[in-house]
Image (cartoon, rainbow, N blue to C red; front, side, top):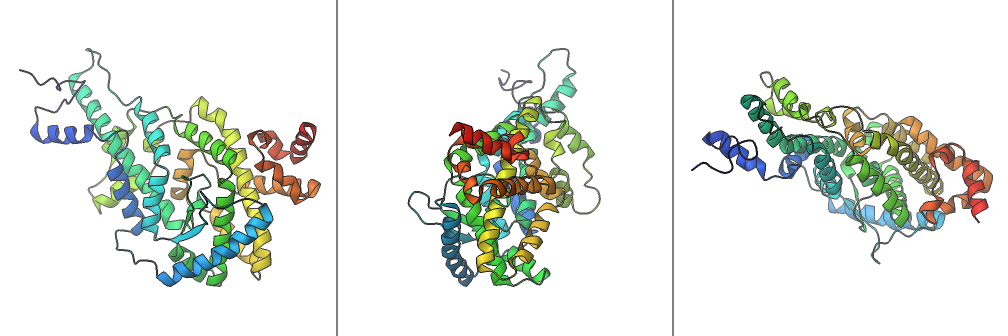
Length: 395
């Protein structure tokens, strides 16, 4: 009796023992292989070497700084940083641990992304399709979750190598009183730029606490999460993208694992073509909100740092230049989630905040935290006077 799993609707390789076992294993992994994602994230973040644990004295020093930062940010913004009654805690981690925590935090987004890309990955059941080509297409669809896992893991790993803290990617994570920072990366940057390590640590803690305070506002968290989730779920897949990348992969020279990392850290394997019309329609709102969040956080950090750190502007210039000069590989996760953290986007947000403060003082920014209806439209981000006028009419 024939195996009911044979054929295009099941496992086409069941009659070939080796391939059949592979296909069976791959078929149960869901839209994205999280084992592959974790392995490639760790490999990329650590370079394949063992990481040293963070010194307990560093944890103690950072949590001394967070109390100072909380007080300053609270006074300047009036925003609450506690979550569920629990005070904010800075958790120092290695790049590898940052990558693992980021994968878990953004798992719903990457699952949504993989699901949308997988919608067109199934081969046709048309009887006119050549059986050999149908088998190859079926194998490609079985391999796609593994390839997506490799790609997502590699991209998050690249981000982890550069990250100072969890809000380097300015989107909400699941509500928590813990905020991650990467002391080794912060200290290395301070050394490379001849900056005082303790002052740079305090500056980064201020940045993270300010970002956490803004992301802790319910309507900002909900709006930003909704826009990013809809963008991640809006891709129109290219069913042949994975198979084409497998065909073009050159593992004959050098290290095969490095070739895999290089190939699958490129988001074109997932993007395939261009963004969908739905994503294009979302882009202005997402770009506007992200710019305003960045602009507001930068504004608050500048005010707080000026009170606490001598020559704080030097630190800000160095860190923010680093932020906008990221390489293409470091931008891949941003592209997938619809974020554009370019110099122009940062300047747009800072100009909006400066325009509001010039017209209405720092208090003029408070409506940002009232409700979703008070958030500026894309046009108002470029004309803060219009935003203030609309709020005045509403009042």
